[in-house]
Length: 70
Image 1 (spheres, rainbow, N blue to C red):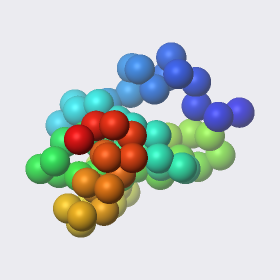
Image 2 (cartoon, rainbow, N blue to C red):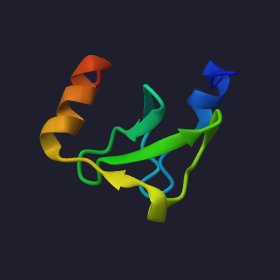
Image 3 (cartoon, helix red, strand yellow):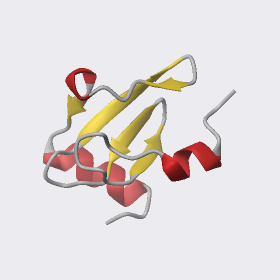
Image 4 (cartoon, rainbow, N blue to C red):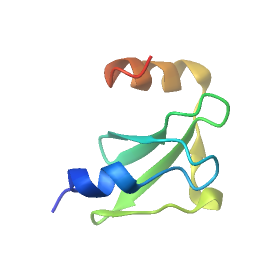
């Protein structure tokens, strides 16, 4: 079962508390300084900072544009 819109509304980046956008099988922080991406395993978001990925600025900007967050 995909992530519900209700869950997406309350999840935030554990590092900065910034909102997240769903991008494929990942959640991406809207915070430009940290640009963290969290994976989703078996429909469960893995919201551990130490397991997140830091995106390059260009990739993060493309994702934000794709989701209307630029």
